[in-house]
Length: 153
Image 1 (cartoon, rainbow, N blue to C red):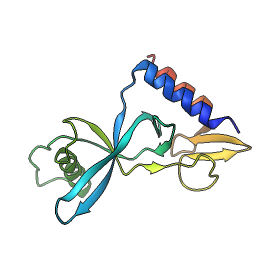
Image 2: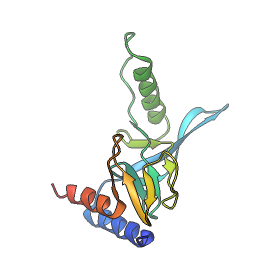
Image 3: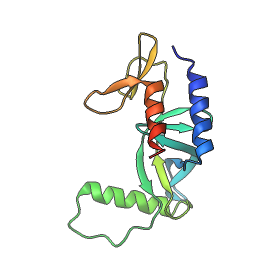
């Protein structure tokens, strides 16, 4: 298997060198006193179907919202649209900066796991990424190199 910690460390160093914007990570918490809020847990870069934090930990992309107070609701919206609107409202009242992109309840990934429904798997000792629902799969190292090259465009 590729030296995964070194690969992720070099990816993080390159993202930092380029000044690539990162995004907030947060979890939904409900308390009697404050209601439902987003609690920040860190920051990470979105690299395709993955999130990578500064410590080189990987997460599956999560539900994403922005911390903006939504406009007045209309009655002909779908249940999904109302749920997205409510999540924006929660993000806005959780103390996040206005307009901040927030990944809600990101799922940590174990690159050595060979099973599960996540985007990572190990095939013949190589960490692979499934980058689309249709089954596109490629080595993590090549995938990260491709995603970083897109930053040049």
